[in-house]
Length: 376
Image 1 (cartoon, rainbow, N blue to C red):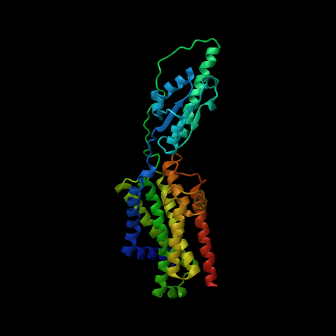
Image 2: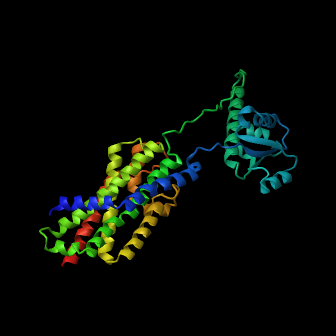
Image 3: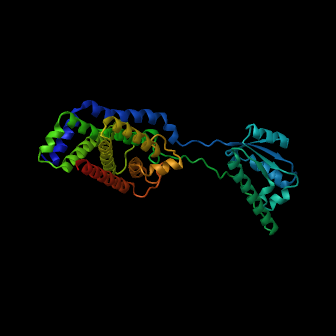
């Protein structure tokens, strides 16, 4: 008996367990369809509506009149919906009651200062639309100041037809950012693979129940060969389920997996090894199937939450925790391969596949150390 024999029979025994294989394949597909469809709106570009702004001018100068005309131009109407206010108190009340997002107020005798470039003379009482109002006001003040400077130099200003500089440019995001089903196909697959790591534990408990472990003690096989065979056999089983999900989701549900296929498969295989190894490591430490399953479930929840598996928007604290999880680096490997740097979903993490390799080596080393202590 050698390592290859152990791998072969481990894979064969796992594949014959149709219920387990069906669960490893069907569960992530169902999750990606349900969650991906429900949360697809999180990834769709949203149209920015024009902010509602009130306008009150107590100034009778020419600049004030020009600003009023400026606010009613076609360019500005796409950004601000402006309505005139008769009293300052009424405008402030409307801001507080959220009838309007912000109030633009020009006090008396402000034209001269505005023409000189003093934007502070135009008061903006802000709500949610303040970010839209501020650049509009500053653009008008700069334009007025430039015009006054040209006139003061004795240069004639040639009036030209006013054409909008704002154009509607349709933005196509297909292939640049993931859809809901694209994102959660990756997230739910790694979530399922973590739970699938219990395969390694089940193989060890089955050996104990069938007295196989006792027979292997007297068999011409070393402990590390047996351990490697179990890890590799169960990892290959888990990897085969992941490949099945990959192919079904790609061709049956049109999930975007259009990255470097070799790199994606390497990430899936390494993560399968890590998942099985974590299960075996926890079983070696606890010697309890129930406790190991509970710990693996807890790790799955923590890893998935911190790596953005439940929602791509995570807090800075969770993101910092996520960097230490294999789920984060596995997901980043795939997202960077498919979308490159075009998506805000992709966060820079150096070389995620390298971190995944290091994580694999660390977990395997811990298993080897623990196994030696158990043997001793």
